[in-house]
Image 1 (tube, protein in one colour):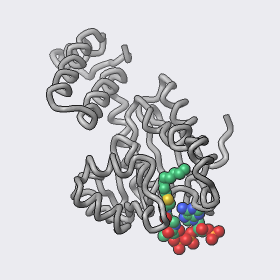
Image 2 (cartoon, protein in one colour; image 1 turned 30 degrees about the vertical axis):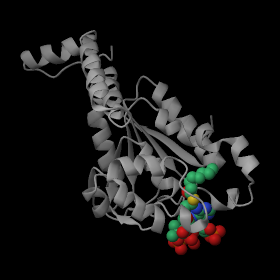
Image 3 (cartoon, helix red, strand yellow; image 1 turned 180 degrees about the vertical axis):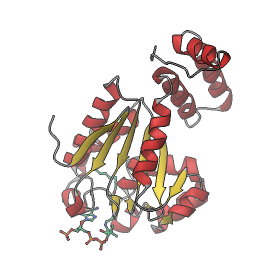
Image 4 (tube, protein in one colour; image 1 turned 180 degrees about the horizontal axis):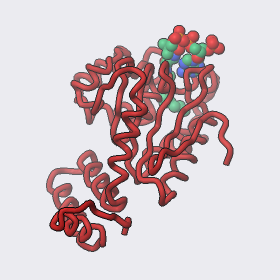
Length: 258
Ligand code: CO8
C-alpha cells in the first residue's frame, strides 16, 4: 500500500512510522488514522520487525482530531462511522512493543495516540494536553480512561476539565513518559530503545507486554494468576531454554523467536 500522510521506514529490526501532515500539525483525519492503523498492522505481522516507533515532527506529534473534518458531522454520522474503533484504535491492537517518540504538541487525539503506545519517549519540547472540552466535546480515543489510570483522578480531571497542558518534565514526574531527552534526539533515543527490545525473543516480549497490560484491566489476584500462567508458558519456548543456557555458558543468546 502507498501512503500519503505517513512515512514508513525500518532501521534494522525497528519499524518507524512518521505522521506526516505538516500543514495541519499532523491533525488526525480519517486518512492518516487509517494509514497509521494499516502500517502498524503490517509491521506487527512482519517477522523481521521486533518493535515499532511512532513519531511526528519536532513541532507536533499530532494536534488532535482534524477539527475541520468533523466539525459539521451529526450524531448519526459519527455513530455510524465508528471512527475510533474502525481506524484510530489500530495502534492499540498491535502485539509488538510500541514506542511513541513525542516532540511538540501531543494534543487531544494526539495525546491519546501516544497513550496507546507502550512507552513514551518525550523531547524536552513535548507538551501533552486533552483540551477537548474547550471545543465542545470530550476525549474519545481513550483519554479519560488511559490517562486516568496512569496519572490518577486529580491530574486527569485537571487536564480534561481545564485543558491544562503538561510539560515533558511534568509528564515524566507523573509517570506518563518514561524518558525525557534533549530536543531533536527523541526519535534516535526511541529507536535505540526499540532496538534493545527487538534483541529479545519476540514471543517472550509479547507475553511480557500482555502481562503488563493486564494490570490495567483486572484485579490483582487475576493479574497475578495470568502472570504466572504466562511465565510458565515461556517454558514451552526454545528461546527460554536458549536465554538461560546462554547465561550459564557466558555467551549472548541467539533467539529464534519460537
Ligand atoms: N484540526 C485541524 N487543523 C488543525 C488542527 C486540528 N486539530 N490543529 C492545527 N491545525 C491546523 C491549523 O488550522 C492551521 O491550518 P491553516 O494554516 O490552514 O490555518 C495549521 O494546522 C497550523 O496550526 P496553527 O496556525 O494553529 O499553529 P499554532 O502553532 O499557532 O498553534 C496549536 C498550534 C496550539 C496546536 C493549535 O493549532 C491548536 O490549538 N490546534 C487544535 C488543538 C486541539 O484542540 N486538538 C483537540 C482536537 S479534538 C480531539 O482530538 C478529540 C479526539 C477524539 C475524537 C475523534 C472523533 C472522530
